[in-house]
Image 1 (tube, rainbow, N blue to C red):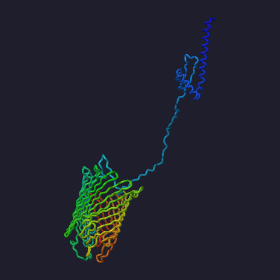
Image 2: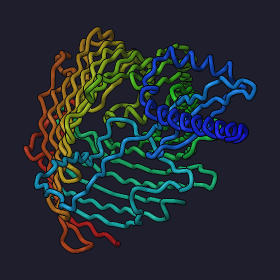
Image 3: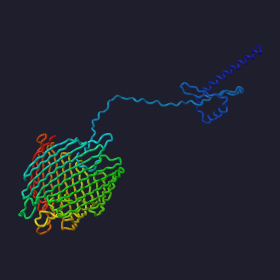
Image 4: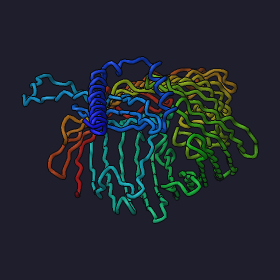
Length: 599
């Protein structure tokens, strides 16, 4: 064999041997793959350092195994100049994050279970009575005009009746117009009756015209004109054997009243409410005595916030009285500025009332506090107030028609401290009570004149009075209404008289209104009144009148669609008591008749 052939054979053998060694080494690396994964962190750090040093000679590639996992493989390429560098393979990662397979929710098509239990549903229906305990707040929608809670219908009816004691009565009521724009109501009536005593007669005629008009600027105008004429006789003279003609003892009172009022139905842009009313009264009798009375009331209220408001009330009452022998004036002017505060806890009104009573100045207080008890419907009220009651020939004759012509008229000034409460129980019962201590100045008393005693003189006095009043109402919708009231007065420190002549100490009242059917209505009222004190004409001693009990019953029922029948029985017990000394009332009196409605 030639040396060249031998040299070539040796080179082929060396190459084949090195290739077999490389393949074995590669298989050995694959078998050690699992062991390399479990190497410690220290070895990985060392390899990382070594790999950074040989960064120029190493390369990294991404491959996937059979399961699809991504494996980062780093391998070194030996330097061509360094034939001794070994070939190495380093696996740095073999992890692929994945979520656990969610369990599938299977829904069944089963029907729901029937529930046979019933939920208790209770509804509390409020009472439909009209005894409101609080002042209502109107709801006024922005886009709609305010609507009336009822449909207005013009009604015209005539009522006629007659009874014992030569009694006769007639009455008519008529209404015209539209409630949204203008309404006119006219009422006229006449009644007469005659008792068993001489000149025990009474008759009355009245005419009343009321007009209400609403303008486009949300102003409500009210005008009223009424005329009353009563005729009676001073039949209470003693001894009864005295001879008087009816003309000598006749009493005729005529009263004319004209009134105009203005009120804004919606507060102004400045949140101001006003309601001025001007009134003129003319009062005369058959003895040429007359009184003219001009009254102006102008209350104004301004809302400052939802809690605070200011109020200013102005009252001017100008009167002049004239008889055949004398004449005088009786003027009263009152200013009443006050501040009102409203909250959920309490309401407070605080102010003063500067008053000029016939040029005599008086500064009167005005303080009222209202609060409610938490968890209850009970409301407490306390106050310290002063007021002046304007007396006139008209008001005094209305209280006691048997008075003589007054020689002087004085106004009554009162300072009052009071405390009271009001509330309701359930849906049908409401109640209120008040206890007050009053200091009265120039309170008129009524004393029989000396002689036959048929007329009463006025006696003005200063006195103190303890006043207690209470009332309870029970109502079931419009079918049944029960009302009971009591009033007690205790008089003390009377300066000008030994007793409070003509004043009632105790009075109890009760009223029942029952409507069992739509065309049947029953009304009854009863009262008990303790006798007032009077001065005896012979001994001049103070005596008390007998107590009085009076029961009245009235029934009205339908006969035809437009015709009703009615009956009224007064003083069923036939108790001939005396409200004023020497003047017994009528005994048992019954009236009956019909009412015809044109609509």
